[in-house]
Amino acid sequence: MRSLQWLGLSLTAALLLLSCGCGGVGSTPAPPTPAPLSAANVNLIFMVSEDSANTTGDVNPDTANLTNRGLQRSLLMAPFLAQNVLGGKNVTGIYALEPMTHMQAAAKGTYPDMVPLEIIEQFAMLNQVTLSDGNQSFTANSYPILASYSAESIPVGVAPAPFPCAACQGLDFKDQQGDNEALVSGIVNANVPGFYVFSAPWETVSALMANMNQFEGYNLTLPAGYAGPNYVYAISIAPAGSASLATFNSNINPPLTYPVLPPPTLASAPCPTGNSVPAYFNIQVTGANGTIPTDINKNETVYMIRHAEAHPTDFFEDGNYVAAGEWRALDLPNALRGKLNPLPTQIYSIDPAIGFPASASSSNLSYVRPSLTVEPYAIANSLPYNLAASVAVFSQNPPALSTLARNYFFTGGTFSNQTLLVAWEHNHIPPIVNALLANYESSQTAPNWPDTDYDTIWTVTLDGAGDLRVNNGLCEGINSATLPKWAPQF
Image (cartoon, rainbow, N blue to C red; front, side, top):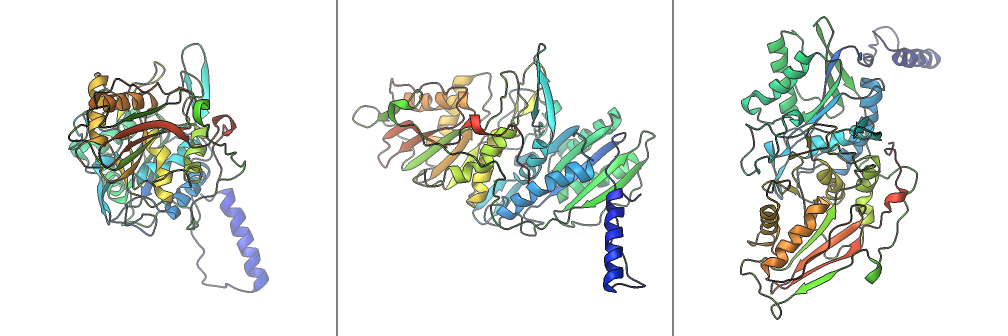
């Protein structure tokens, strides 16, 4: 059935044809845009991400990450999905590809597929979630994105999950153990009406739709091949069990440049200096006053930042950042311009597929926000993006975890002569630095990272002799108090 919007557009087009004398008998009108999906149905909605096998320019061939154009498209696709597909209703669930299940070869190396997470993040920010601690509740512009591995299908080289997270499973590119079908079949069998959005490459989406079509006996005519990043497919299942396929085309033609944030203009602030920095420290260990480890990296700089804003109240935790955090993440390339010397050559973060224990008000969740915080910087600067997937981050044995992270980033020569920008969890950064200091047999320790501080940058430097310097004198210069509480609109 044609929507009122389509009818309005059709009438306008008809009047234009009559007034200009163009068109005529035999002209074929464009197919109507489907009406938004019914909230009374179980709606399986598929966002198709580009990858190295299927790209029209949204993926960088050097890094297998989004281009500026690809990021622009994701920002513009979000309101299209929210309004034209969901009809302004709130989403029921968001599931993305588990990045380490799809390693993509590019000119600069092989990298996990972060594109599905990035293209769905703006949409997540246009939806709301309400969490409570039993006595009070809070609603934020943020929605959890589920992208964790099933317990039986953890990729090689990925740290075993320290906490079970069956409820936060995402999509497996290789569909090991039939994980994808099990996930979607569970949603269908639960028969809870709503909007369930999946973000993954065409290979994953097409196989999943085909298998569900066969297993459930829907007898739908599915798309024959990849049609481009503007298309959204939806299998809508009515209460009686019948299913239909709707195909939406946004017809978006995004700019090629990095996005310009809409108003209000974010206010920048100079970084505090010297003793005005909260808990300021500047620790140095040289061969003259400590023991230099034999396997320590040389000529390495690591900038360590915290994920963007995520806790509008103490109890609020959904694994994602909130709308204010999205402003920070998208502004990060601008905020860091001219501040980092040397410039980063690689970007790293926690694996977003790792599950972690959430508050009592919700089940365990996928920890996606550190990676999504630093992704825009990688995109804007065409830098390789990788995951420290062998470091579990959340662990029953914190000291062993800190040692593992220290060894990963600072020993073995992997990152000698490199400069890294690393996004991490703030409570875990000081223990990593302290484990590094202990490796030098230094008695010095770094202070705790304040819970309210999202802005500071910790810089770890190893020179050509292995001498160590750590300080927190840099900052992003983005004032949390000035960030809007609603998502930027594009």
